[in-house]
Image 1 (tube, helix red, strand yellow):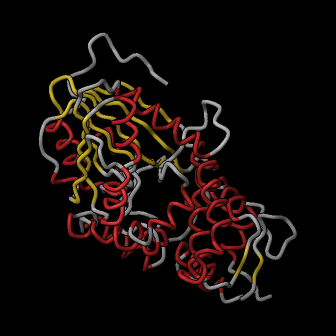
Image 2 (cartoon, one colour; image 1 turned 45 degrees about the vertical axis):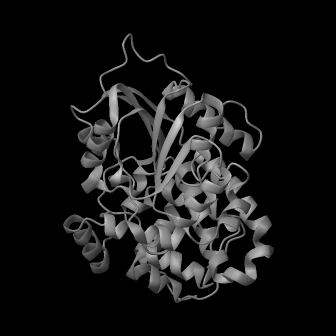
Image 3 (tube, one colour; image 1 turned 180 degrees about the vertical axis):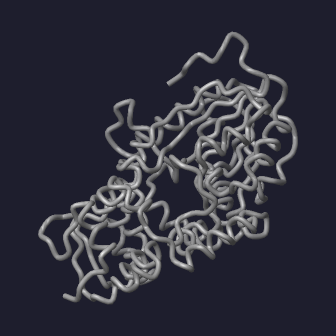
Length: 372
């Protein structure tokens, strides 16, 4: 094997990862050219070379857990390409209304049957809640939906606005279990079609529109998995919109992945191949954006549950793959395996978090009751 670049060798050593070692998290090299690709751009180099079959790893989730626990992402020397991307993120609004359409085409509209096989009957593409003792994914997702309704204190007859509704699972749960009327916004045509079919007869209106077009007055607002697509240039305007849509005394629940430190762009491989325009907020960024708009009633962190959720999705994905192989191809399989398991490693290492934040327009009289 040709000599590894010294700085890459140091990163592997600090993470206790061996090239062609015998442990599940060790990297198995099939083509030594992968190290040149990693040196040119670490994120794209790792992801693209894996998708191209240049290396393998039995337990990608363990590999990324070790690499990120060693904080190797902070030790990477920026390449010219990385500096250009960072500058673009500073100058451009990558989550404008026009640009935001791309993630629907690239990611969410690739096939409802595929997502049903991976996500299960609840069709929840956000973190499940395992802390109540759920033994499987469906039960953990039901627990998340129930938890969210309790935190919002939904009551019969209330009007609920959902921004970024996915396949309509939360809207359906809230209407059926809490007796609320729901208006839900989403830019994915396939998701909205699915939601309308599954929720026929319920007091739910699904609108194939950008969240920025939301209007009206509501008792409660929920955004579950939307904030990851909002972007740091738009956090303030997003929260201002939510405040305008809330009646006096109204409550907003924000469910989002978060980062431990502020950035202005996402991981380059995730940006290019999985979530165009995606970006994870930090506590500081959200705190600045909500200044003088809301009373913070609760900030609940349960990011470790996302590790288990992603591993369950990966298991479902692998089991269902023979049904989809001809349609999507082997390259897609490697890309999605890399996506799911690298994200599991990010949550396991506690580099990524999951937050449910309860915000009150005017403060809850007597204080929030601390529902869990």
